[in-house]
Image 1 (cartoon, rainbow, N blue to C red):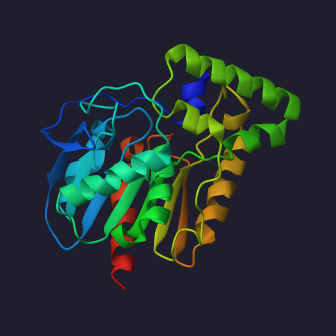
Image 2 (image 1 turned 90 degrees about the vertical axis):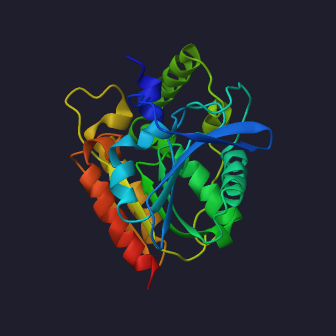
Length: 268
């Protein structure tokens, strides 16, 4: 079992091919798809090492309510295959340029999963004029390792070392070094006052593979993101015990419902 990838939120979803188009951004061919119409534009940022198929369970449902854009970051999906170090800020810069190239002039509702949450936080801080609301699904956090150490310092450090080795054995993806650097990412008020929703998985496991997935680890994970979301004047935290890391797969109806509520809030 690859504990590291479970821990880091870099699990691969089931791959399915989409009716994608391509646009060249800074020398890279980025795969993307646009569907739906309406007043709002929803921009989907996939999880670590995942292509735009990360959003298959909810893409069509969202398109019934808004124009929705999904894409694959460089090195993922059918976008340009490359092994190069990228940070979440690098990816945020590419996402900003992508929206401009696609002719999106209005601020978007940015929806991100897992490592995509790191990209979203950098995007929101760097390009406030391009975003009007933020939604993150079980996002990665620079503070996840703190949970293991807080539960049991010695065992936590041992498990973190094992997780890193497991990740390296699987192959270092473009964002591997960025993720493990655990650098501080933008929070409120670096990110402007806007509607924010964070859906966090606190689902318990019968046989947790490491401290992160113990009952105490799940509780602390939920508390971490509750505190983060509640720092925003318009923030909302949603904890779910029904979903694992892929909330959009396990509870697509929850994702769509909370997105519609966020869209309403963004219009006030």
